[in-house]
Length: 272
Length: 240
Ligand SMILES: Nc1ncnc2c1ncn2[C@@H]1O[C@H](COP(=O)(O)OP(=O)(O)OP(=O)(O)O)[C@@H](O)[C@H]1O
Ligand SMILES: [Mg+2]
Image (cartoon, rainbow over all chains, first blue to last red; front, side, top):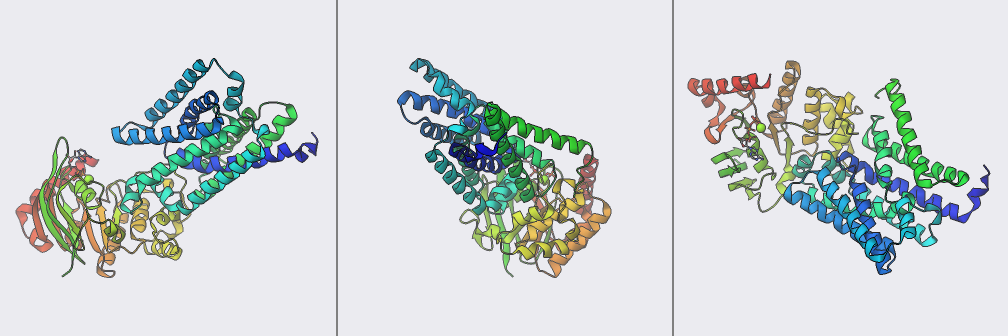
């Protein structure tokens, strides 16, 4: 393996966007995992599939329609869930299947555009443009700033909604905000791992980090580090061996999870 | 005397049961009110309504003279310790993280150490919340409730499943908060002895309010005491 690959500008763009997405997914994902909403990322990703198909059919840049459809459907499903008291996992199932169903019907009408769809299903990080990279950095920056500003309220309402409410935290608004940010994060990340593997980025580094039994900030930092490591190493390995980055990234983070489980069951992870 | 809380004709009707029926009472600032009543008496429902968690009630609830339907500002002056502090067992938060969640003014970081010291849990500050014993956990939640210097502390039956030694410590903390720091305390409990020692007012609740008044008056009425100690005995058997 030669270091030459680090000089290619497409590789710079891939690594920069990849790192931003890794950090973003791990932070937003941590709140989703702790809210027992692990599969929400997956559900939004599937509904974005419907959005992508619509965009391709209408001749609009598919990520824009994906943003629109994902965010709107995520907010609607959250509203329905609260109003009719549907459980989190059931509402995720509804969102997930309706997104795919819309996508399939739209593809049927268009006579099929399987090649374009493929890159959205599995990601195409080595193909990100300068514009894509700028957009990814911008959205990552905005979402991280919002989370930092509302850190206490978001954490508190994740910990316990009722107590947060009693402390005057506007819990409902915070919940919608998280769903909204998750929608943006998912669609932004599609370019990295595609629709099918997105929840891996949301969930695996966080489940791994939580096992270390640390405080909140440390857990978030551990998760981010694992996530960035998997993405960077995954992109490099996949380029060198000419395999798909998405699969490699996810397998690496599963490797870190398995390693952590090994350390933990060997009793080496003492608390404190 | 200043009125901290004023509850008038409070009625809560759930789909299947009337949990509270025409309950009215006043808590003055500096009072220590013990609320007693058997399971299902409506104690938690009363607190939920006072804290804005249940808005489907009839009647009126005022804090510091202002109707809580008009403004949620009163919540700033209240610390609440829930009956069951529910959270994910492996939630990645230390004791200081949890207390910090309650802190409205994030620049008051010192206040966290101060309150942890006051409650004898400072050495636990970096421990994960899921590893604590019931008694330690309870003090963490009291610390979270106290970290904003509330004027009123509301505790919903917070001693079930805690050993005797921790209970004694907890009672002495409550006594000090009320007598030295002049915090108004509203506390629901099954422990008549403790209420006798600590509270200066008693309310007996069982859907309606059976008694409300000075605690000497309650404890000099043998009939009433007998009735409620039996109710609380059943309660204890329920829990074991
Ligand atoms: N959210 C709710 N929906 C419907 N009924 C409720 C609800 N909460 C409480 N109840 C009912 O209202 C009555 C009063 O319940 P509440 O929890 O207020 O009693 P409690 O005095 O706190 O009891 P405990 O000592 O067991 O904590 C009970 O019959 C209960 O079943
Ligand atoms: Mg109760």
